[in-house]
Length: 335
Ligand code: NAD
Ligand code: TDX
Image (cartoon, rainbow, N blue to C red; front, side, top):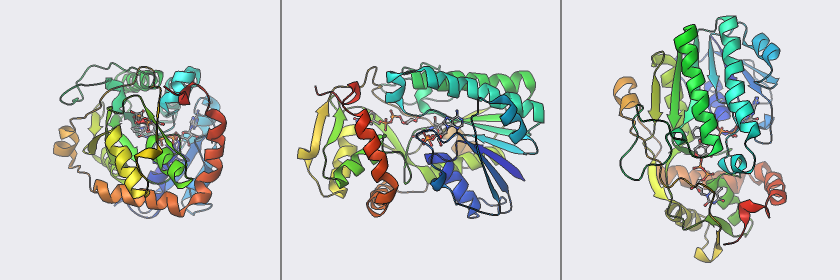
């Protein structure tokens, strides 16, 4: 078994590959992995083992058709994580999101068709459904993305679906809620707040902080992706949720407590443009059909994540310095 994993120098893909190489997915203990990653600002080679007998790392762009076609050759399955993933950056500038998330997905799938890859999982997000005031989204819910990031992911989902319908690619799509865990770039809420507090700095809470997100540990997301890879049906989409629904004020309080800080460390800043109020998934399909259930208790997962950032400053210190250059733009304007 040979698996090609795109974007696995990033947060979620690297978690998947590390677990796979550690023998964490039954039946895949001997699987060989090729990682294709551009190493954008979000990708880090050191998120993966420096060398491993079952790992090959290729630095390259999923939009580069000759390269992707060559790399795809001989693989049984493709797991497609590579994307521009941060909403605020897409508000600043959308072009790279459309290029990578839409064009890159189309290019990758052309390569899969050309090289006869047998199985593809396209990793997507709950944000494609928009925002929901009450209740939760099933997979049949209409797509109504609000940010350029979410729109680019929705477009890529439709491109992916079309390669199943048109070219007969055995492809499934996953749509997961907000992930948290180690190795997440400090531009996202949890690692940003934790690393700011560890440096004795305030945390920037957008707007009134009443926006709701459903937080799922990255280990649970990756196990769900493995289930979809091995048991999912072609042409089907699977929501992956079951995390904890919390307002941003609630999660901020928990992070403050774990970092030994209080509310005086919160800096209210201008709201994100087009800020989605609430995400909530109905994930009964993957539970009932594939036997998924999240295993990491939220309190434990969050405490472990804070501990990882506390114990691994060498991983994030230089990244937060880069972010400081970005701060001072519209992203962190005061109310
Ligand atoms: P990330 O930003 O941490 O990692 C993205 C990776 O893709 C990086 O290693 C980057 O170098 C690589 N990449 C970017 N552009 C590329 C290109 N053109 N060619 C090759 N590689 C490229 O993202 P993440 O949080 O790990 O998210 C992974 C996937 O999961 C994305 O598709 C995202 O939409 C989806 N997702 C994320 C979350 C979340 O909470 N983070 C939730 C649901 C779904
Ligand atoms: O500094 C901040 N202050 C703040 O209040 C940041 C970075 C975020 N927020 C708010 C905005 C959101 O309501 O916190 C919430 C979470 O923000 P992000 O961590 O940026 O995540 P979100 O926008 O919800 O999107 C995430 O989940 C779905 C991922 O980044 C996406 O890749 C994934 O698809």
